[in-house]
Image 1 (cartoon, rainbow, N blue to C red):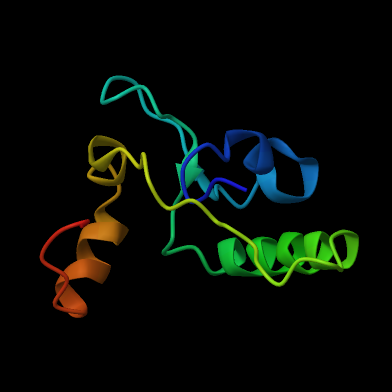
Image 2: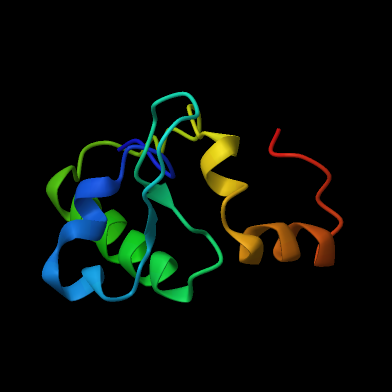
Length: 94
Protein backbone atom coordinates (compact mmCIF):
# COMPACT_ATOMS: atom_id res chain seq x y z
CA UNK A 1 0.00 0.00 0.00
CA UNK A 2 1.44 3.33 -0.95
CA UNK A 3 0.50 6.04 1.51
CA UNK A 4 0.20 8.92 2.23
CA UNK A 5 0.56 9.62 -1.51
CA UNK A 6 -1.28 7.79 -4.29
CA UNK A 7 -4.50 7.56 -2.29
CA UNK A 8 -6.86 9.65 -4.39
CA UNK A 9 -9.07 6.62 -5.05
CA UNK A 10 -9.41 6.09 -1.29
CA UNK A 11 -10.79 9.60 -0.93
CA UNK A 12 -13.26 9.08 -3.77
CA UNK A 13 -15.26 6.41 -1.92
CA UNK A 14 -18.70 7.74 -0.97
CA UNK A 15 -18.16 7.35 2.77
CA UNK A 16 -14.98 9.47 2.66
CA UNK A 17 -15.64 11.95 -0.15
CA UNK A 18 -17.39 14.51 2.07
CA UNK A 19 -14.58 14.36 4.65
CA UNK A 20 -12.06 15.88 2.21
CA UNK A 21 -9.32 13.47 3.27
CA UNK A 22 -7.24 13.61 0.11
CA UNK A 23 -5.60 16.67 -1.35
CA UNK A 24 -6.29 17.30 -5.00
CA UNK A 25 -3.79 19.75 -6.43
CA UNK A 26 -2.41 20.72 -9.79
CA UNK A 27 1.28 21.11 -10.43
CA UNK A 28 3.96 19.87 -8.12
CA UNK A 29 5.53 16.55 -8.98
CA UNK A 30 2.37 15.01 -10.33
CA UNK A 31 1.63 12.85 -7.30
CA UNK A 32 -1.83 14.21 -6.65
CA UNK A 33 -4.30 12.65 -4.30
CA UNK A 34 -2.43 12.31 -1.05
CA UNK A 35 -3.79 12.24 2.46
CA UNK A 36 -4.27 15.39 4.48
CA UNK A 37 -2.81 13.97 7.67
CA UNK A 38 -4.47 16.67 9.77
CA UNK A 39 -7.92 15.20 9.09
CA UNK A 40 -8.76 12.72 11.89
CA UNK A 41 -10.76 10.49 9.54
CA UNK A 42 -7.55 9.71 7.64
CA UNK A 43 -6.38 7.64 10.58
CA UNK A 44 -9.72 5.83 10.81
CA UNK A 45 -9.56 4.95 7.12
CA UNK A 46 -5.90 3.88 7.29
CA UNK A 47 -6.61 1.72 10.33
CA UNK A 48 -9.56 0.05 8.58
CA UNK A 49 -7.49 -0.70 5.47
CA UNK A 50 -4.54 -2.02 7.47
CA UNK A 51 -6.82 -4.29 9.49
CA UNK A 52 -8.41 -5.62 6.29
CA UNK A 53 -5.01 -6.27 4.68
CA UNK A 54 -3.83 -7.95 7.87
CA UNK A 55 -6.76 -10.37 7.64
CA UNK A 56 -5.94 -11.23 4.02
CA UNK A 57 -2.21 -11.77 4.39
CA UNK A 58 -1.98 -13.84 7.55
CA UNK A 59 1.39 -15.42 6.71
CA UNK A 60 3.28 -12.15 6.43
CA UNK A 61 4.58 -10.30 9.48
CA UNK A 62 5.03 -7.07 7.47
CA UNK A 63 2.92 -4.41 5.80
CA UNK A 64 4.75 -1.78 3.79
CA UNK A 65 3.04 1.61 3.73
CA UNK A 66 5.35 3.40 1.32
CA UNK A 67 5.85 6.91 2.61
CA UNK A 68 7.69 8.29 -0.38
CA UNK A 69 6.61 10.41 -3.33
CA UNK A 70 4.56 12.88 -1.33
CA UNK A 71 4.40 16.24 -3.05
CA UNK A 72 5.29 19.01 -0.63
CA UNK A 73 3.66 21.35 -3.15
CA UNK A 74 0.30 19.72 -2.43
CA UNK A 75 0.78 19.69 1.35
CA UNK A 76 1.79 23.36 1.20
CA UNK A 77 -1.70 24.11 -0.14
CA UNK A 78 -3.26 23.17 3.20
CA UNK A 79 -2.80 25.74 5.98
CA UNK A 80 -3.83 23.07 8.52
CA UNK A 81 -0.74 21.05 7.61
CA UNK A 82 1.50 24.09 8.00
CA UNK A 83 -0.11 24.85 11.37
CA UNK A 84 0.34 21.24 12.52
CA UNK A 85 4.00 21.33 11.56
CA UNK A 86 4.57 24.59 13.42
CA UNK A 87 2.76 23.37 16.55
CA UNK A 88 4.84 20.19 16.58
CA UNK A 89 8.19 21.76 15.68
CA UNK A 90 8.38 19.90 12.37
CA UNK A 91 10.71 21.86 10.13
CA UNK A 92 10.32 19.93 6.87
CA UNK A 93 8.70 16.91 5.25
CA UNK A 94 11.84 14.75 5.37
